[in-house]
Every structure is written in structure tokens, then in C-alpha cells.
Image 1 (cartoon, rainbow, N blue to C red):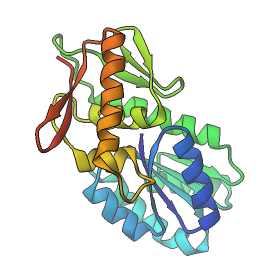
Image 2 (cartoon, helix red, strand yellow; image 1 turned 180 degrees about the horizontal axis):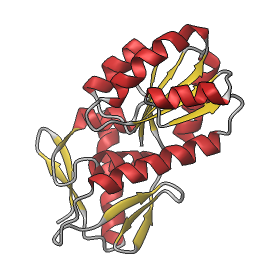
Image 3 (cartoon, rainbow, N blue to C red; image 1 turned 90 degrees about the vertical axis):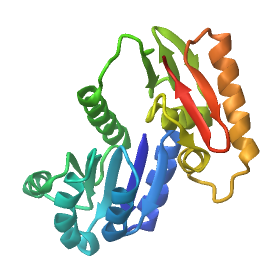
Length: 226
């Protein structure tokens, strides 16, 4: 999943950024809600996690939540309050959040709630075709699954194939793949992308997957699933 992480706490940002990345998510961080709204209106995210909400963020939070809920292909919005009562959590949910936690919270529970919201969103938007290969990623095992067959992905392969899966049978720019699969790197050699794609192709061929990764000359790649 691609996650936009918003926090005014550097400690919380470092902790959650590391935890999400270790769980094979692509993460982009923002230190204020105004910048987060700008990013979310220009790029596509599966979830927006707003954490360590205290005095510095609480006022702007209730202004931002309705705007986030109106975004095209609205991402799941998860809020973690620094402190609060059940009434505070209810108020956050009424304002537009999909889930609300109060510190101390369980990262595992937060991630499972986020994944459940994402699965529901995918199910609602899915338009199956009789001619299209049914591909999906299993976040628990980090497998790519095609008609019951499974192949284990590395973290980088997982992120790259996840990015391609967002636009199946459509070209994805190399720069977009780099931002998604290498969110922790500022400068990525194009050969690194080629290497990961080559490994993916070998895995798909060795496991007799029908899906394939095609090169789009001078542009990037696409995942063909027909």
C-alpha cells in the first residue's frame, strides 16, 4: 500500500515510517496537514495516517478531515490521537476519519484496520473481466497470487509490482515506479529498476504465471494481465 504519514512529532514519524516500511509499504511523510492535503490532491495514496495529534494539529485536523474525505478515490484516513476520550474519537470519526486510535495504541491493530479498509475499497471498485488474469498481493506472506499459484516477493519487488497493479494493462512511468518502490531514496540508478524487473520476470516465468511485465520504450513498464 502507498501511505501518506502526517505527524508533528519527529519521534512518532520515525517510528511509524520504519514500521510501515518494514511491513512492505511505500511511505511518504508530511509534517503538517496543509502540505498533506496538497500531496493527496496531486498523488494517489491508499491510506493517510495522521498521528500524534495534539494541540498543534487538533484545530487543523477538523478542517482537513472533510477535505480528505472528498478526495477522488478517497484514501482510508486513520487518526491516532495523543490523548482523548470516547467522545473525542467519535467526533473524529464524524468529521470524516475511517478509524481513530488513542495512544498508546497497537501498531499491529492499526495496520490490520488499514488493510481491512483497503480490501473493502478494492472490492467495491473491482470490475472483473472474463479475459483478465486475476492477480493480487497477499500482504501477510508478501506473495503475488495468480489463480491459486503463489510466488514470494522481496520488499522491493513487492512495492514495484504493487505500483504496476494499480494500473494493470496500462503504462507506468519509470519515475513513478521509483517514487513508489524506493520512497526512502532520493537518487535511484535506473539500473536498479531494471534489475528488480528482471528478477520479477524470472520469477513469473519460473512459476508459470501468465501475467508479464512489459517494457514501454523510453517510458517505463506495464503489467499485462490478459
